[in-house]
Length: 419
Length: 165
Ligand code: SF4
Image (cartoon, rainbow over all chains, first blue to last red; front, top):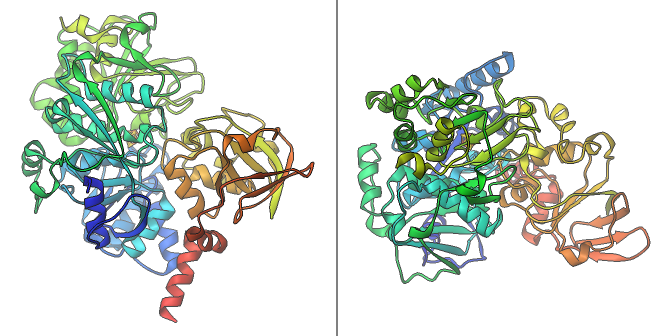
């Protein structure tokens, strides 16, 4: 069986499952945030007359309406806090960072887990060898009420990267390339699995970016089989009861669709407005001069992303006319970046540091891109009007490419700046 | 049978277009007035109860925000027919009691904007005003009881009541 089938079979209490069949699974972990979470599931659970099925299997993080900026957002956070308390949920992370980063960082994920998240980027959990996928609030309320969810057993789409990625190439580039190559529905709502020597060489935060942006590929989840890198990371982050061996990559498992790429040939990628699938090599965008460079989001502002961006900036000043905004993905990552002197690099360059939250990526707050703004962003999506006015133009790139553009004043191959 | 006028959209209609982030904290009735405004500014103001939305590939891609489906329902859309759906949107739509049916490209031919159609979600049969028919893939039989109940919440309500009775 593929990794996806093994996890689903376990959660469904079956010896084996076959792609296409519909099974009901017991949910090991349900993660929700302040936007799709309590404010929307509370009325449904009240209507059903039930509470959460198991408070120890629920993680709540506030990140979308953070920080509060008006009466409505304040009310949403108050409701969230009170509901969590009333339901006796202990894993509550208030303004600690983006849910997809906070949840593994606090030791809630491990290989073999069957998990759902109330957010489309929940496939991030797949980086840890967990089968994790996003659902809407009504479906989440159903999970919270019953502890179960139905799933159509997916096919596995295996994407293998052999060799090694060159310097200046990050997981973000891999995903933009795949979006361009396979399209926003190339994942067909199946299980996408990443493998090969180049993937095995990636650190966990980079693997998280791959799994995260499986949402942009239209996969249900994005999996990376567990290995020693997974085990080490989880141990350092306090995950309990971690088993690696049952969830390692099995080269004999039959994939239903297979793609093979040579990592050495991949150049840094940029996706033009208004789709991650409008991707091409960075060299094709030399005429673009951004006003805003945004380093943020679950997919682009983890510690490794911040380190990479800071290394490019070094002691260079920002280019004239470019504003650099940095919203680290979690409070813990920010602290570590401070200790390492990474945040000082951004500050010295004149960047504005934003709270560790979804911020402009979600476009839910009071700070949004103004009309006509050209932005280069380390986020996952550049849909029209998402980050601000419908006339703003968002180019997606790796944190390296965003930092390079911030100091060069135009989109430029980060390898030129790093040289 | 349900029916009304047809609203036509293209491929890759995303959830930021369906449920714009700037209005996401507002009540759904307010949010719905901005549904699809970046794609077709006339849509939300002129759509009527019973109308049908017909789109291309990967309808509803992006966020898990179910307001994307809820807004269409609040505006009176009777069903969404698309060549394919993004997975989360598809589940959200059915969970909210909004029929979502796959309409293959060849079956979409000849259907124009604002044409009158009627359809039956259980069989997938689409009738055009001039009398011709098109065939959409019916909603999977296993999900019909939930759709008939009006979505996951009333369906669960029935189930929980049934269990305690
Ligand atoms: S940072 Fe952006 S992509 Fe990540 S959860 Fe928040 S809104 Fe979604």
